[in-house]
Length: 298
Image (cartoon, rainbow, N blue to C red; front, side):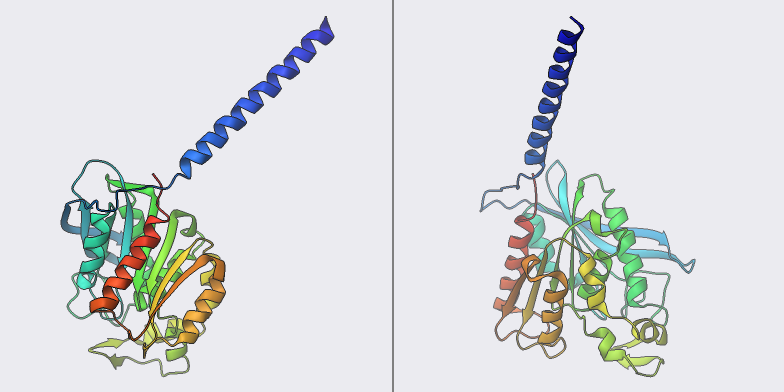
């Protein structure tokens, strides 16, 4: 009799384990179901000013100003955080914010603090900002946007152009951030920045209507971005124009190698330079949108 009950108990345990395994598999399948929206669906877009407040590593009280775009519908949505380039502003991605939000993404574009003339973020100056203070800003934004009621915090995407792409790549690779990011997309990421400033005098330097501070130059002197960015192990979208005079092809190829060719969706737009407009912009926006939709789950 004792042996009988031992056999029964073993069978029950095995059955329970099998049921749990099946439930786990069903849950895993459910979690991996891609979201499919009708091809012609466009949500109405709402937008409003949104500030992100935090204290940086130097003890500065930082107030980041940006625009939050939301679909005009109840529910939770994936989010895209957009990072501008050198001397850029939150206003630099109107086509991207409009198009992505129409397709069911919350978008947040903001001013990096101290990183532009006439910016609306406060707490840091041109002399103080570096790619690493920008990374602090972006980390604070990720934390804040993940708490917005209509945002699905499990599906946060990063997007950046030029210097903003450089910072996006550095941030996504951070050990404390990488698992919170679903995927990243970049226009012509300026991974050339360390090479451009390596060996240059560490002094305030006028550049393209703004300036690069000594702190910025000092911070990138010994940085090898390709040794860092591959720590992000999820998928990456890069869009680059083959007439880009600021970011050479070797830096794009270096990014593909660092991430792994199997994880990079690279689009090269013939005739496009450093900055997209017209047909090139339409191509770039739709390419990134297609990438986002291929990585967004229901």
